[in-house]
Amino acid sequence: MIEILLGVVIGVILGTISGIIPGVHANTLAGVLVSLQVTLLSLLGPVALAGAMFAALITHTFVDAIPSTFLGIPDADTSLAVLPAHALCLEGNGEEAVRIAALGSACAMVIAVPVSVLCFLLLPALQPYFDWWIGILLIASVGYMIVTSEAPGWAFGIFLVSGLLGAFSLHYAFLGWHTLAGGSAILMPLLTGLFGISVLLTSSQGKMPDQQFKGIRMEDRSVVKCSVLGTAAGVAVGWLPGLSTASANGVLASVIGYDKDRRAYILATNAANTSNAFIGLAALFALSRMRNGVMVALSELPMPSMSELTVIGVLAAVAAYVITVWLSHYAHHLNGIDAWLLNRLVIAFIIILCLLLTGPFGAFILVLATVLGLVPHLVNVPRMYCMGAIMIPVMLYSFGIAGI
Image 1 (cartoon, one colour):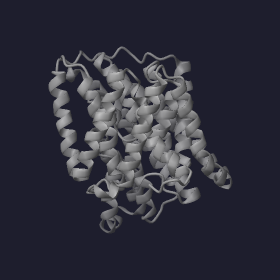
Image 2: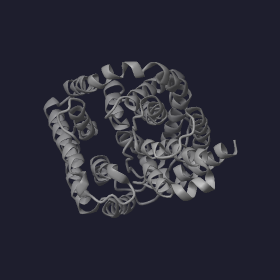
Image 3: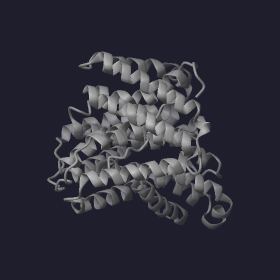
Image 4: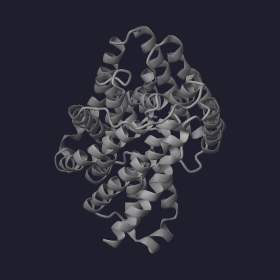
């Protein structure tokens, strides 16, 4: 019990830090902890060390809503959710957006834990069938989004070009530096350019509006519906190979629509992000498949039981919910800040961080992604079609067309 609590405390602290700092992911911290495992195992023990990694991942899925909402900087897992969250912030409802995100993650935890146990027990025998249908599922979802678009030609073109950029970036990711973020570092400039800098360059230039919390304006029925949808999407991408929460965001956009019901979309995508973390743990134990950098790090340690790590994850989720809501309460300190200056400072920070993590190649991808990310704004097409950067590489991977 002492090791479990120690893992929770350390993980929550680390996950809060990674969640607040844009561009830093729990995968980054897991890589650092693994590199120090010889020392840390003797100090903490295997349960506390592994638990700290998993608790950091769960905590990060809650807290990363804060920079996404107030600064407009996307995380690789929830990049598309930045758009409605930051829009609510610019309307003075940033605290509500963060609380909705935290509520979605909390609901996902309640649903995903028992579902992950069922997946662990029932799904391994069906895995060969799932692997083949991934690409078909994504093609169907993307086809629906494009056909129902107001400008199908532009939607298809943006989706295709962003997909080519994503495939190029991932295929040649070895050209970038990998200081602390590991092989997935190239996603940072790719998604930040598409959904971060391009948004900041076209956002409002006045003063930050007064941030006032007037309650969560969602019906209970909508909360339940979106929690279930988001959790289901997170379970799917957490169990199936090659997918990520970013893929789930794209699919959810075709069901909910981030431009039509922003609050529902924020809740659903954050539910998907948190449920993905829990189901990824079940996939690790049931299939020995690593769905993210934290699971890769866990596989290199003396593994505690799945039940111990699940308990740690639940405790971390409770703590992370409280921390996220508490931090959102300080949104009023942003009242009256010059949005133009804040956006430029954030852009400068992103560029410096990109150079440090990925080097010149990452900067090159950042420029290309930013230019492409401006196109939807210019032609008045939803930016969600830029998710081709993730979805097309996954389709290629599913059909064995490209080894990326």
